Amino acid sequence: MPLDPSHAGRTYPPTVYQVGREKVREFAHAIGADDAAYHDPDAARELGYPDVVAPPTFPAVVTAAAIRQLVDDPELSLDFSRVVHADQRFSYARPVVAGDELVFVNVIEEITSRGGHDFLTHRAEVTTTAGEPVVTAWCRLVVRGEA
Amino acid sequence: MPLEAGATLPVRTFRVTRADLIRYAGASGDFNPIHWSDRIAAKVGLPGVIAHGMLTMALVGRAVTGWAGDPAAVVEYGVRFTKPVVVPDDDQGTEIEVSAVVKDVTEDGLARLEITATCQGEKVLAQARAMVRPRPVGKV
Image (cartoon, rainbow over all chains, first blue to last red; front, side, top):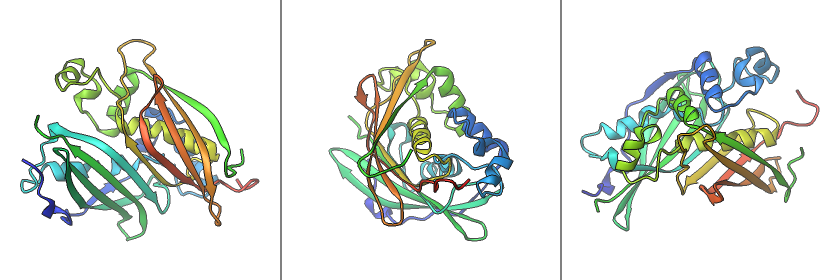
C-alpha cells in the first residue's frame, strides 16, 4: 500500500539523548577516526570545546530513534523491510560534544511517489534541552514498491 | 593545505572489512542483518553483505575533516547513496576511494567541496557535498 502523502507535516514527541564521552570515543574508534579532539578532552579544550568532539555523522546515532518513531507509527504503516536509506544531510550550528543533553523533534517533511516507489523525507531538529540549536538532520527513505 | 577555489584535494582511501561493519553496527546501534549476514543479504536480493551507508558517509567525513585540518570544521554535509558497498568475507574486504574539488569559497570563508567516492571503480555516492570552515592558519 502506498504511503499517504497527507502524513507530511506529522510531528513526533521530543526525544532526549545524553551524549556520553565513551560513546563518542567508541563511535570515533569504529570509523577509524583517531583525531585527538574525538578522544582526549584536553585536546578538545585546546580547540575551544568543553569536552571531546563528536565526528560529523555522530548525529545519526543521536537521531536513530527517529526512524523507530516512523516504523512504530501505526497510522503511517511503513514496511521497514522495504526501506532503503537514499539521502542523508546534516546542517550544523556547532559540533556535538560529550556532555551535551540533546533533544530532537522528528517531522515528516515530504512524502512522494514515483515509479511505484514511495519517498519519505523526515527532519530531526536537534537542540540542547536548554534550546540551543545544534544540528538539523534530513533523511530521505525509499520504500520500494511491491514487485 | 589551503582550500582554494578550484583546488583538487589529495585522494584518501579507506579499507572496509567485515570486522569494521560489526564494529560500526555496535557503535551506531544499526544492527540491520544486511550488514552482517550473507544469508539475509542474499534473501533481499543484494550481491552480498553491504556496508552501512552511514559508515561510508562517516569515512568520507574523515576525508573532509582531514582536508579542512579540523575535526570540527563541517558546517553542512550531505550525500545520496547510489550504489551499495559490498564487503566480502575475507581479510582484505574492500576499499573506498574519496576525492574532492573545492568548488568555491564563500565571502565568509566557507569552502564548498564536491566529493567523489568510489568502490571497485564505481561511484557509490551522488550529490556528495560539504561546506567546511577551515581553521585559520596559526590558530590552535
